[in-house]
Every structure is written in structure tokens, then in C-alpha cells.
Image (cartoon, rainbow, N blue to C red; front, side):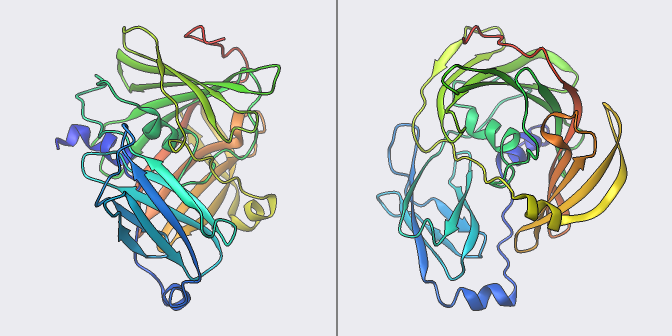
Length: 321
């Protein structure tokens, strides 16, 4: 794969560090909890031989029916990642013992292969949602967006070689029944000749995607098929968890939008893997976050940095409502 494509591949793959500390290994000797993961492709065909890796260090592969059992010896929140050749990976979280005995279906989309941003015919939202609405299964949004608010981000990695993508998301409209329309734009920084635009209808509590509409470059708007298993609602952090994760307070942070004061929050989401969030002291920033990144073994996996935000005016570009 050419290095110019590396940023997309790394954005599609959140590295899972499978090394375990001694405490984790001891807990896993008594695997009293488990879930089954059923892996399907875009045509609902079982994917045999997919790798299923959990943040407790356990690894397994799917059988001929596309099913793998993952066992846990500890309670709490665990991240599970699914990998298969020629498919984009899928990351999600389970909570033990609440999810004990459940069958979790994950649908994998075809691997992203393109030069620049010339998208092929494929479902993009497993890739996009990993990085705009979820970070390793957790919500990077610490404050609610208001209708009409939007943010724009640069996305880079430790191996991006200078390539930077920009993504923006916006809370477009709350419908009378509480359902929400959100918008997404994806482009390569400095190149405006190709752009990906999508508008998504969420359920009232944003636990499900109900509709997905997209426009790639100058092509026509398409209504994409939406089924169960593509999207998992990210886990929201409690106020106490946020407070407990604060490592530094009121530190200066320069962004393309300007200079801010921020608190640095650090969460250990897997052995040797940290999620860092810079929370804005300025409540005017939609979502309340200025930057977030994943580090594995003290090396950068990927980073999202705020480059712009608007407190009003975001509306549909695809005439979705």
C-alpha cells in the first residue's frame, strides 16, 4: 500500500495493543463472562476466519458460521475489535456482566482503496463514524451539541507522512418526534476537487441509525441501505469518570481556530493504550472537546484536532428533511 494511502488505512484501523499486565492475566484465568460475536459481510454472508480481539488480551477467530466466543474474567467495559482480510475493521464495546451471553452482530464493509478521495461504490459510514462519533468505542463528545452547531477536525496519524484529512460534523435538525439529523463532510486538506457528504437520521436517543444519505463528489445523492450491526452507540462517560481522569488543568492549547484553555483527561482504555482528551474551558465549543488522540505503547495511533466550529447556521446540503 502506498504511503499516501496510509492515513486512510490507519484511520480505518484502531490499533489494539494486546499485551496484558499481570493483574489482567490473573483475572482472565477465571473467564466467567462471555459474548458471541457474529461477523457478516455486506451481503449478510458469514465471514470465516475473522480475527476477534478483546482489550483483555484474548484473541480468537470466527468459525464457518462467522461466530466467535470471547470470554472475560473481569467485570466492566471491554473493547472488542474485529479484523478480516479485505474488510474495514469494526470496534465496539461490551459491558460485563450486563452483556453476558449476548450475540453481537458486526457487519464489515469492503476495504477502502482509493487515490486521493475518489471513492468507490461502498458504505463509508463504518469508517466515518469510528472517528467522528466514537473513539475506541467511547464518545469523544463531552458536552451536547445544539441544533445548528458544527465542528471541523483535522485527522492525522503517527505514519501519515504529511497527509491530513478533514472531517466535519453538524447537528442539523431535531424532528418533532425527537429523531435527529446530523451531517458529515470528509475531504483531504488542501484538495477541494473531491468531497464526501453524508446526512444521517438517528433515533431519539441516538442509539440507532435509521437513514443514511450520501453524495460523493459530483455524483447524485444516494439513499444507502441501513441495517442492524453497522453502528454501535459509543459509551458516554460519567461526570465522576471525567473528573477522575483529569491530569492537568487550565493548560494553554493552540488550535487553527485560536488559543484556548483546556483540561487534559487521560483514560486507560486497554492495556498500554490511552485515550487523551483536551476538554475546552470555553463552553461555547460544541461538544466541549478541542483535541483527542489514541496512544499505544506511548506512540501516536491517531489524533483529531479542532480546526473550526460554528455555533449556529448548519443545515441540510442534501435536502434530507
